[in-house]
Image (cartoon, rainbow, N blue to C red; front, side):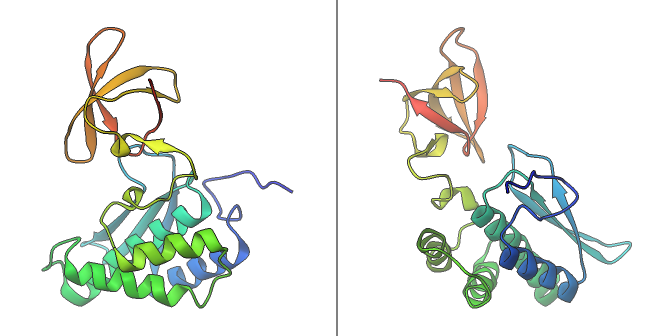
Length: 194
């Protein structure tokens, strides 16, 4: 039976993923929220200085393995804050170490298939600030970040662009129909135009 996704529960995830996430939320005393899809980020960690509360949000539309890795990415920020009180770089060596350790630790709690294990192992050996840089998109899909400069592509919406320069988290792209410039998410799934 296919479970529909809701911003009110994580029952669309495999049961072992659910149990792992719920256990961590309880242990770490985290306020957790599922977010509507965001193009700018997959998840977010915040510490509220007034209430002294930690919160994590994760986009509801992610694949189960991407959801899990994004949650662990944000959990690593929380644990890094607990240890260093914000005195280290947000994606520095301290965060990378904690992220890798959490990923390694979770392997013992989860039933992962071969593809999921491969993705997790890539994240462990090469922890990155942007999980979209690891092969988390479906097999055979291309994202804007994968395209060389000046490549023409079509978004899922049907609009066509030419990839130009990289900005921080987006790419400047020229609309092929009118020449206007747009910032397109590095995570946007595309088809190249030959």
